[in-house]
Length: 227
Image (tube, rainbow, N blue to C red):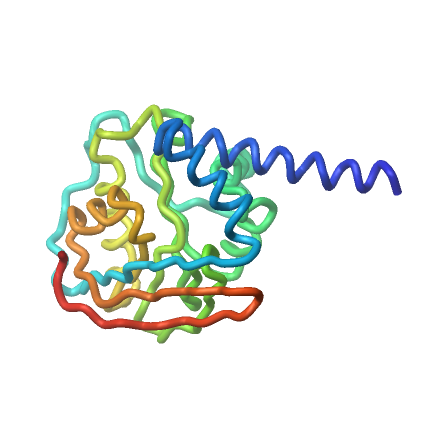
């Protein structure tokens, strides 16, 4: 029993440590400290998060020549590719131990590789809208896909790779007969919203999640253009 409890605490400590390191890489020391204070002192009692939802009409997407983009190659991740699966799961705590099953069940993950090294990935759900940060899940229509997670490793940022990943996976979805490609970004993360705009997405609305003393509420507001 002691070992089991210790193992659980060690796993949680490792997850928190990875999350802090990633925030330091993405936002710097000042914002990371503020986020830690908010998560530790405020979130147990009150939480409010707004997500911008955006959409790409796949039938309007121009064809993009993918074969030669510097060192990067793109391919669909397969459930038996243990090395790359582990590399992808290592970038996102909530995916740990679940990605292979999700690929078997039909979800799509395009990886960008630099040789054999993972440079980035885009995970797409083909049947469920998921925003884990606000605990929201909704079924999708058959002609719609949801970008659940896009990640570019720190060493490969500021090279246009995230936009390339969006274009590659959008073309793959178009080939499969999908008409709309959706995603969401936290409103307080302007870099994610700039990426969506650069990749040709249009905003369609915001979802605001609020929780106060255990009571939860969602609010949807439609919008028509970038602000």
